[in-house]
Length: 359
Image 1 (cartoon, rainbow, N blue to C red):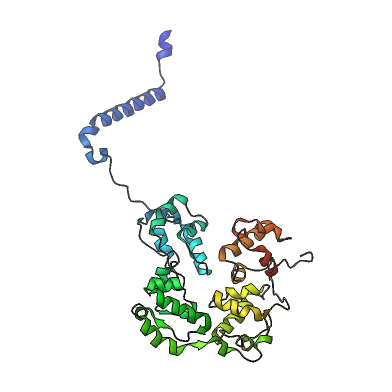
Image 2: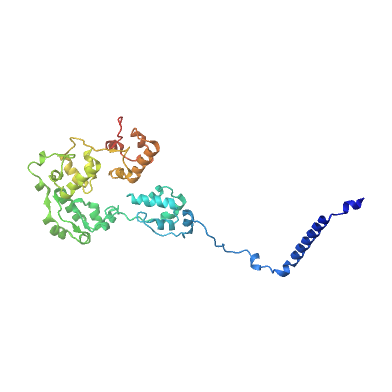
């Protein structure tokens, strides 16, 4: 009976034979493979190079491909390519360039930290390489450095300490001080020549050119009054010591401010020395305050920074606050902001308005 279970039909027998044949063929093929195909030894060695492949590079990938190198640079005159070479992130580099294009300037190396997106660790590495040439008129602070900065010297604004630095004797300085209190010096002198002057050359060179201050008074000088918000350049020139150049600067500064609110603001005009300001102050009056304020709820960064009391960072802080919090309803909102806390708000309030009914 068991034979019945082992018996196969004709079709089953054919299938079995085909299956056995396939198995045998596969076994023969597997055994003969080492003889037919020799292995490639190079494929078994791990390559130390990266296979070439086509990829889509992102801006970040491009930054990584730029070889980083440190070099001395002026942050006010650098382009985006050099910033990327220094290792600055592309986003921060774009912010940096946009800041310069909008008229911003870095006055100190540490000001670079204000660039949005700037990495603090990278900044500390860059600080030793940052060099900012100071403006000619302000690049030196000490008296000895002032001697180097200027090729000529205006004796009307010169101090005894500066003359001592030049090398003048005490007798020369005393003579100069006496003349300075009562006379004007119309001539500028080259610094190299002043260093070799003696008391005799001082008398021969300077004394004949002196203009006595009392000779500049007019008969109506005692009654002269200058309205600092209304006077034009012709009125300003009625004051001794104020010529065409200074009068134009005063009017231009008044226009930039939007109007004067304090007589002492005249001393802020470039070229007006403390001595000259004290001389003309008795003739100045603030009979009216006509101020053209800036609407901080509509003004752009460029418009705000044009005001003499506001820097780029002040202006940007105001605009950023407005964009984040909406219209400014009270100036007290921005007085305590970090960038604006150093402003003289007693005076600054005159120059800002809100442009709303409850301002």
